[in-house]
Length: 117
Length: 111
Image (tube, rainbow over all chains, first blue to last red; front, side):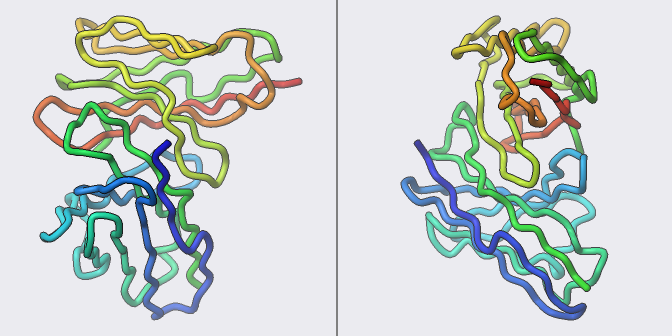
C-alpha cells in the first residue's frame, strides 16, 4: 500500500529555533501534499496544501512566513517552523494523495511531535 | 474549518460488542472517508464511500452514507481491544480539493 514517511517523529528544541519537518511519499508520486496540526484530543486542522512546483495554499489564520512549505519534488514536501516558540508546540501531520482524483484516500505520515522549550 | 462532526465524542464498550459512530456534515461532498488514529500516531485510512453509494463493507467495518441527511455511520462489529483508537470522518467537499475532519470519536474497547 501507499506509504508516507514523516521525519523527524519527535523534536525538542529551544525557543527561537527553526525546525524542518520532511514528508516523503515512498512508493507513489504526490502532486499535492497536506499539512495538518493537531492539539491533544482534538481533530486535525488543515494548515496548508502543498503543491509541487508552486506556492502552497494556506488556510485562513495560518502565517505563511511562520510556516514555510516547500514542495520540491513529487515525493517530498517540507514544513519549516521558523523561529519556533512554545505556542507552536503541537503534533504536525502530513498526508499525500496518489493521483489527482479526490476519490483517492489520503495517506498519512506518523506525525511529528514538536516541543518548544 | 471543520466539516464533519462525530458523535459520540467518546464511547466505551466491552470486547465483542458492536460500536457505532456517527458523522454529520454540512456541504455537498464527493466522498466521505473514515480514518483511525492510535494515540500519538498518524491516521490510517479505513473506508472511502462515494456520494452515490449508500453502504460499504470492509471486514468488520460497515459504513453507511445518507446524503439527504448529510450523515454517515461507522459500525465496528465484534469489537476487539485492539480497536481502541480515535475514529475520524473526513469529507471531500464537492468543489474543493481539501478534506475536512470531524472532531473524532474516542473508542475504548475493554478486554
